[in-house]
Structures are given as structure tokens and as C-alpha cells.
Length: 262
Ligand code: DGL
Image 1 (cartoon, rainbow, N blue to C red):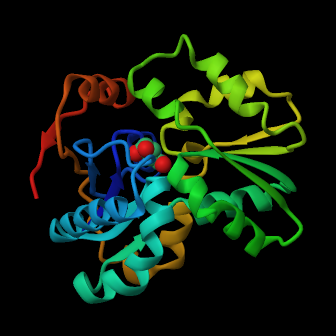
Image 2 (spheres, helix red, strand yellow):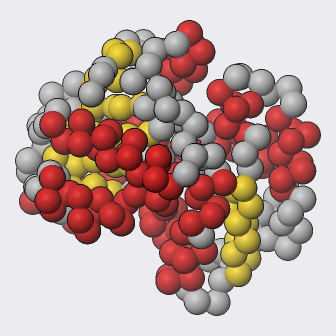
């Protein structure tokens, strides 16, 4: 059985790449819902529907473990999937998200005044504030929606990036840590680091999710033992377009993308 990775688009490839680097032996199936990207500015109802369709597809393709690598989908759908949908519609499939591992990493690094940039839907859910405060009730969290970033990254428009970023980052004058709460943002983590003072820790999911998955598999032998070790990789999207192919090739140079319909 495989490890499935789901994102609303291709940002999740950044995380997939770290999984493949750290845990190359497993079989991976990536699904990017490019037909419906972006999720971040959609209603919760739409995000939930698209996420359920996508994880169901991955479960039907023999994924034993599914990582929702999309912060927006994690914020809106993960709890419902874990508590209601998976036990009923795909028993035996474990579904994890990206928010808790990110919050754990921030708190264990000693973060106290935390800024979060994310999509509008993620910020509206306040999932980061809730999860961070569950781990340490003394942390102060400020979440800011950064709706201009995903379209700029998707369009490969990095010229205007710093001006737009500067604007968003000015909302956090006091922070000691910045969480990049969107799968696209690892692509601009160095821009953030350059714009912020050295005392601000930038927490980027591509630098933590690989370790978190390895740790999870060590702690869950009942899941690990169901996973096959053939080093296979399959990359699927719900809509191929030239822009998507260009971004994918930049992230994983020898990538072959298939379009799937479900
Ligand atoms: N993948 C989404 C996230 O991590 C960002 C892109 C989108 O808006 O769909 O929040």
C-alpha cells in the first residue's frame, strides 16, 4: 500500500520531495486538485467537497496513509475526515494534516510570539492559533491572510514578491517566529528570511514534514508494516495546464504528470 499526498495544486510537491528524500523506499501517489485551485479563497463547503473527493480517490488507489499537504484543506476538512468520513467511507485509511506538525515544531523551538501567514480560509478557521495555544497556552498568535501570494507564486511572478511580502510582514512587528502556513510558501521562504531580522525564525513545512512523517511511521508500526517499499512515484492532477507543468518540472525535474478524472 502507498502513501498518498494531497494538495489543492502543486505546492504539495515541495513537501513530497522532502518525503522522497528522507524516506525514498516507500511508494508515493501525489494528487493535486489543479482543476479547483485555489482553495484558499473558496467557501468551506466547496473546500470540504473537493477534499473529500480527493482523499476518497487516494484511498481507492490503495493508499494506507494520506497526508493532506494543503493547509487550507487541513483547516477545513481534516477533523471531519478523521472523525466521521474515514471511519465510515474508507476504514483502515489513516489521514494526517500539516497544521499540528507545524505547530509542534514552532512550540518545541521555543516560539512565543508567533506570526502566521496563510490563505484566507486557513486564517478564518483560526486553526493555527487553536493548535498552538493547545500546546502552550502562553503563546501569542497573530494570523494574517495573504491572498496575493499564491497567485504570484503560481504565475512565477517573483519580481513583485518582495513588495507584496513586505506589506504582509509589516503586520507582525513583535514576532519571534513566522509560520508559513501554506504549501506554496516554502518557495518564498528565502524572501521572507531576507526581509525579516535574523532573530525571527521562519518555520517552513518543507523543513519539518519529512522528519515528522519518519517519526510518525516509527511510532506506528501497524501502519508502516502495511506500506510497500518499491520506490514507486505517481504524480496525478485533476487538470494539466502548461503553467502547472512548468511549476512541477521546476520542483521535481523528471516528473511525469497524469491527468485523472473522478
Ligand atoms: N495549498 C493551499 C494551502 O496550503 C494553498 C493554495 C490554495 O489556495 O489552494 O493552503
